[in-house]
Length: 367
Image (cartoon, rainbow, N blue to C red; front, side, top):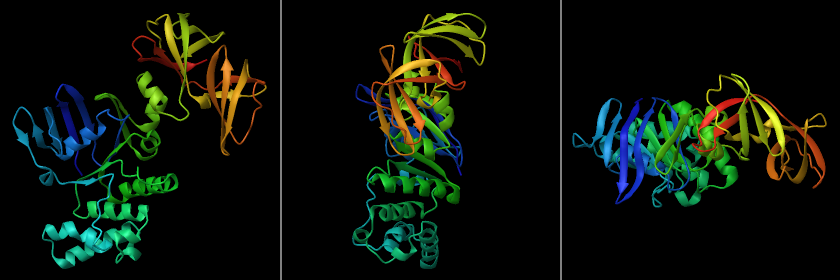
């Protein structure tokens, strides 16, 4: 399986820059997700790697072969890049059976009938759709249609499989099921997957690495949990996680090599960093994940319940603290009456300090 390398890849549409000097390495056999809000350049990036969009500048290599170079005038067409593309719209042939849809591309590649039959049978079994072999797309559910589309894309053994929001047309329950199937399929095929989505939950659950983009600029590349716990800046911290991180404006005064006094929401606490702090600005943003706030009678901070949102397995609790609303997550279906007083404490050593001006991560520590 190939490694994909993008060097200073830029794409402009007129005066608008969709992707700006993107440098990215996609390791072999990885499941990479290009993540970000609408218009951030993730689909454009995918299409440039696949050869469906021509970059304005830069260089793209697949498996050590240059498939695009603006300087050298190289632009290998999509059908020569040995990649498969799964679109948001499955685009199955309505007049063909499941077998015929999967076999269609192989017939165009002049495979012999015995080889086609063996390959289609292998894919039907892998994706657990053998019983639908003779059905037409109109006789299949959305999830079954998607499996057929995946089988058709995998049929010619592409080096890389590209997927552009392939689950967006499915209902919530089916999306969850298909995430499981895609993750398993990645292991079974031993292929390189490049996946585009705006759904951070999909990125967290599916990927070996997440590439988060904003306005055409790559913000961070990291494993999902690494990005969740150690976001590079405020944009990444805010985008990753549901419920979103609490961001509290704080004043900071360094008191030691690894300690600082923080004042926020009427509370003053000592922040103990996991590494030397270096120079610390006076104005910072304190970032705290909701699960790191623990409500209990032993808590050392008092707040007022603003609202509770029980969801069975967990409850999201909004608290009013010094004029600010903060979010906690409590395990279990616990309900707190509105406007009652509760106590909470800060748990763990994953509190984040951001520079309020530059928005970059300064330190990680405990309160």
